Image 1 (cartoon, rainbow, N blue to C red):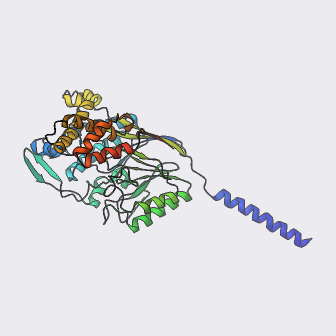
Image 2 (image 1 turned 90 degrees about the vertical axis):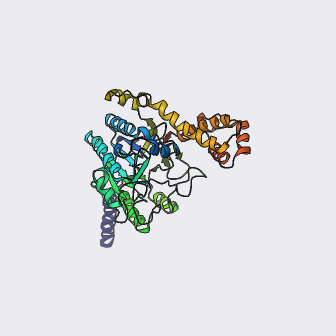
Image 3 (image 1 turned 120 degrees about the horizontal axis):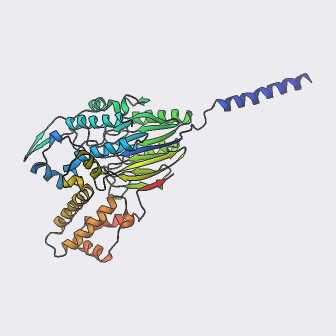
Length: 414
């Protein structure tokens, strides 16, 4: 009888102990409802570094359609729009500057300070254009003069108030850090541009990253990850130099610890990969038509993503500015991007008599693709065949877009 009583006492203690352990383990923290804005690839250049003269225009019109002649107005209009919408946070995932010039970083930090003064915390990370650039320059008339860039440490100093100073943890070997966006929601900014091996997440960074993910899981917190380069391929033609070089290792970590999703940029194309365990949203460049950014509406474990374009015309009206490029910015930016595509196509086609028709088709497809709206493309088999007889790369590029499907890439829900 005595032994039976002892057994019951021990058993009861074990059961109570188990309940105590269960109660002590953290459950999922309640995030609640919040909205987060995410933009990327601003490619801002300080007005002190360009007069929009011949040298600058030659560089920007022979590029990828970034509306650089009006980047100052665009970024200031964006800042004003974010202040009015008042999301819980603004995330900027790299390529903050046009060519890494110190003056551009310092001027942009001033604009970001205005956003924070308006009540919106800002979190930044560097992109491949932002650090140690040998292309940082001042453009004056027909002259180009190299100017000072910034190191990784100087970048963190200039943008100290935008994520680095309020970080929960910082990686000693890169500019990666974590921050708490809201109760139950951790932001993981994974930098692969500020370390010793650009493009790679080093072993030490991955070790730090796993420690942060493990700590978040132990606290019952969800994690929203951000990178500049892509975690996945968003096009068979945009892999080397576009993806994180050891992306498979990063993906394995994110899968193991249940990261909610990854936000990236870099390719300037609006595209979503939802076919993996950890989805990735590559937001298009703010500097490229339709000059959009992402909006995440989160409610607990669920959320949605959509894009919004910057209303530069409304900002210009408030400022009393009447330049047609600003008052009609949407059309100006669209035409700037289209003209870039037309010029590329025509230079490839030479004096071919059907060049205009083929170039127009290419420009229309390219605009829809970059905007994340392949569902709006009207494919013309005859023109595709004609392109195939005139060029090697462009038909391959067009076919990669068609093979990628016709889903709207500007919306996602989880």
